[in-house]
Image (cartoon, rainbow, N blue to C red; front, side):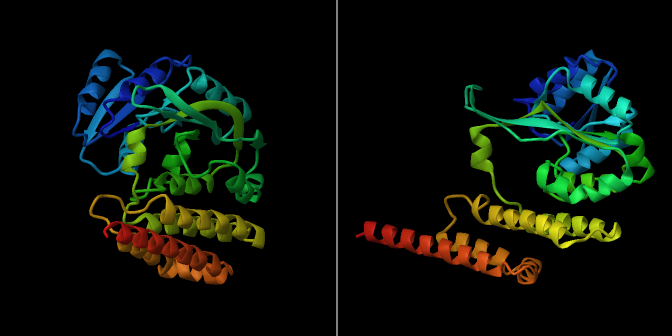
Length: 327
């Protein structure tokens, strides 16, 4: 469990692991250079329960923290919950039994996105749709992969259970990316599996708070992260000789959504940010060589340019309104 400045939430997360009906687990709390009380809370739990171990390291990001956990992990299976989320008490019991009984290498379970207010009251809950599915051969897993990318949350790691031996035998690591490192990890892991299942049991609870929305901003290398993800996906399809028009379309739609997300949800924030800064941010993304070539290749460049022009028009309108208010 990577931990970074989540002192306000980590107890709920750790307590949800302690409450599991499955008791044969080990919890590695990786304090990734926290500057609040998170590190000391990790130590407190480790002192009270021999199944919990606290590891402290310099800040390196969630991927680096997970890699540190993998270096010390000893179990047959591994999961990657976040320290501000929580999981239902029967989750690991159900998942381990399902993995064992069906000889699976990867299991995906459902999640619920929950938004809390400042008083920790639930404001909104939304379930991510997931359809039951089981694949029992490597051939079947690979042939269905592009379809799984369309139907399941294959880009994260918190709502999945992995087999530790596969990770170690194939030296799979979380890459040094500020975003989407878990998606790249999962894809590289998927390349090595021979059994997959998705279950419509909504065990995992992603939590969001008002402060999360206020702080949300795009890392400078966000588009780079998306490109690495997209390139990894395409390379797998080429390796498996399963690159088709439909599979490229599915990945293309995903990449398009990510670019749009970067342009709309992750705009520059702050009192010193001008409208021209926002517009330049959008233009820089559009002019990225990989993004530009991608849209030219897939005949969707007009969508990007139309969006850029539409946002530019909105900014000009807002600037005009602000100018009028100064008179």
